[in-house]
Image (cartoon, rainbow, N blue to C red; front, side, top):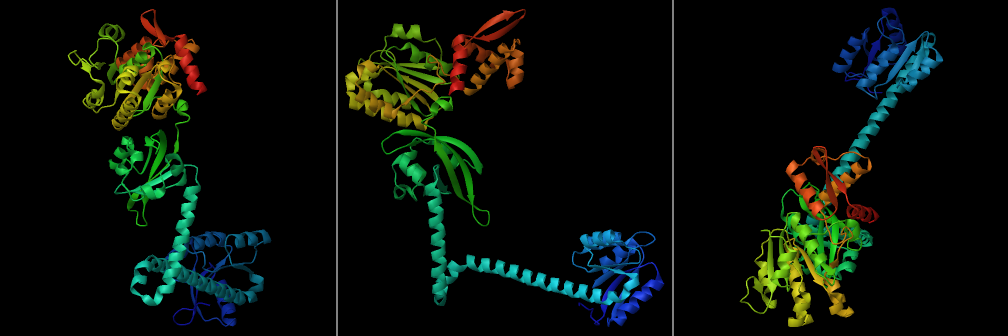
Length: 532
């Protein structure tokens, strides 16, 4: 039992009959209970007493004028799950009694058998006392656990000061080492590429999958700045993201990693903020995969990458170059072709710069074979496109090794500047071994290229929309395209013009409107993209 300060059991009686209340009190006193009883008759009175007083037990009649014992039980349980509640009735049925027990009543007593009341009250109070003791013990245990955790967190510092606890320190260090080894095994077993970078941009984790991809051992990169590790020399997007506040906690990013063999790999990764126990930022964890093998599925050219165009003629590579320029890039065309041919191939536009390879530096716009890197460095830092079309000439003048070194230098420089680098090589002029060296540095174009035409993702979406409308025999107006993609009429007109220039659509006048339709070439591009 849980008596009050004066030793009396605090009883809250819900009873409208004073006579019945006296009978109940006598039965409790017969059972040896010293009582401190308060009687209420209504729900409001019950709520008021529960809010201001503390009771050891609630006894309620089942039938009351304004509410019943079941209602009283619900009111009590709103206040407390543990306060004993005993139902007294002269007419309660078995189903009602069972329902009361299910709803949280401790017992029910028939008025015809009030002799049980004292025993029931004592038992209910004792059970409540046991529950309180258990709760107290549980609370004490939880507090102890919290204190234990706090002490464990301070263990490293405490152990340095208290030699007497050296064995405990060794045990804790051993457990920590096991935990770290287990976590390292988990990370190393993952097929994904996993690495972490702290707030100072130093590498803290470098898993086995990355080691196999780059041929760089963990010891070669740990605690080194990302900017100092050669593998990230072409990863300007990644470095920019790490230096940009608020870009992380979670981001998706694509960047280039360079292996020990100087092979570039395109990595698609998710970066997440690493937080400490007090929610402070500790660094960034990257989990990604190598998408280089299935770059065709990627569906677009990657800024900062170099691409090899194996073709005997120049027309296809120039078409590709022009399609990228029309998409809004500045272009540089480095070629050995004569000026007359160049003027016939290229439109007269301000965003294309032509550099003609020549050893005669007196010619206008000429560049020596050894001066290519200088003119590229002067070209600007914005995302651009450069087409190197005079590879055979450079091999003849410089020799293959010097030409390959020039390609390496250009590729590395342009990767940092997010420039698309196109190199046309006539495969008939180089043997397989030399072509293999070049292919090891430059990527083959993705399959979004159709007859050497490359389009940006948003333009591809527009092309697909036009095709769907054509298939449904629905007229495609510029206004409809503008509304669909939330872009201006001027932008729509420019994209339609570019697609028409690439031979992917043709425009037909229907009434007062000009409507685009896909050509067979455009349909082929869509089919290839779906297949990829």
